[in-house]
Amino acid sequence: MTADILAVLTSPEFLSSLLRLATPLLIATMGSIFVEKSGILFLGLEGFMLIGAFFGFVGGVLFNPWVGLLFAVLAALILGLIFAFFTVSLAVDQVVVSLAVNLFSLGVTSSFLRLIFGLSTSRVESEVFKPIAIPLLSRIPWLGAVFNMNGFTYLGLLMVPVVYIIFFKTDWGLRIRAVGENPKAAETMGVKVRNIKYTSILWASAFAGLGGASLTLGDLGLFTDNMVAGKGFIGFAAIVLGRFHPVWVMVTVLFFGMVEAFELNLQAMGSSIPYQFPLMLPYLLTLIAFLIAGSGLAPKAWGKPFIAGDE
Image (tube, rainbow, N blue to C red):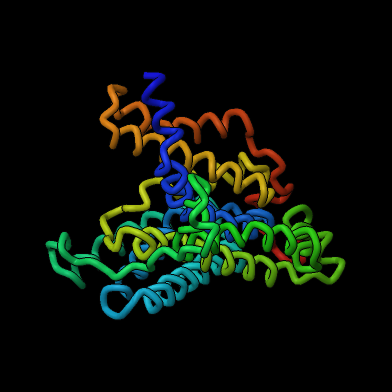
């Protein structure tokens, strides 16, 4: 068993798999940090990723991957506007709306998949974005895998310093954090709380859609029912475990990617370890993360509806 584990961890395919599997979560979580820090409980990440994966696939099949990206973002933004209207404008319970988004996305994607492509979708494939090899760097042994990925992975890694700068070096980031901590105090200082929340939700929606699209347009070129398969909930757990900080969230996402890559590579090598054990690891670690970290450094107004002028 030890030999199997060492063989997996030192194989050149392991790092490539790690980054590829972490990419959808990395993109989605870098957007979701904004909405979480603004005080909105964004448990609908799963549904937004699924919508992005489906409409990205549809655009890729009917047109090309670039149109697929546009479809994914637009569909996620429309769903984001609906989510924002209910949670911000109507102050409906954010958990209830999030669950509705997840159920709606699952039903819509499954129904539209058959409506557009028929009952048998096994042979329907989309063109995907090809890996972009960075000259010289991509030839480095083992580490070269980092520089031979598709554009989604580069986008996810680039977003980490961008999100950090926005949060801690700009007025916009300060307003988002202020709204998440004490929206009433922020309102008295002239901050337009609802505008901040709407903007944060739309930002998160767009990147959740891109994260979902990376599943269908980044590697597979296929869409199956509920193909996100809990990644949205794992992404939410990564944000909590990462203490709502972009760098630590990235580390947590990469850790989950490592666990999933380990499981897949172990199966591919024909290990004697039962496949069910590594298969359950990401979800088991998600539960452990919640038990250990709790709400971490969650914003004080996290999940609480804001009503302007309410005392």
